[in-house]
Image (tube, rainbow, N blue to C red):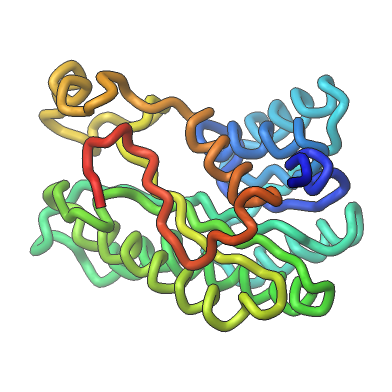
Length: 255
């Protein structure tokens, strides 16, 4: 079996939402494996630049690209900039999501459309641009970072987010079936309770200690746990995993 680092060295990846938290950890993990990484954020150029600088300081290659991935034209420009700097995209990891806490009857049409565009349509916009090149070269990795509420429905007042997270895995399976014959795998990585910087107002009445005790391994997940899952799927060791949901939740839910 080949070492993952050797398999990935020299590849090019776009990781959306990689200015902080899970996306940042994934991008750094890929860079450590020798992947040239595009760091994407939607609002903070400062955060994007900081991740690029961190990767470059450890000897890796990275570029930043600030854009709203819910805008198909902006995604097209990001892919074009990536190809100009690093060449064709080999790995596309979609990690952007809006997690609004809204009772269903308070979700407006605009709210629904905005969440759908950011959480689901953005995945389509990126994948449709990178798949032709992956197919031509006979190698590619698509990873869609979902959420466990998309499988369990256990979080109240997030119908739009849950619908999108479930849809991401359906989309993963469709692409896995269609593009698997061309050396391309498509999978969903599903975070459980992960220790991240977040807007806790969107998680009302969350008892952090109680949540930890409900997880069999008795700890919250860390962003590096998600990065390890993505590295596995991108590398040679995960090449026979296709159309699957890899749940990283410490056993809180078992499927």
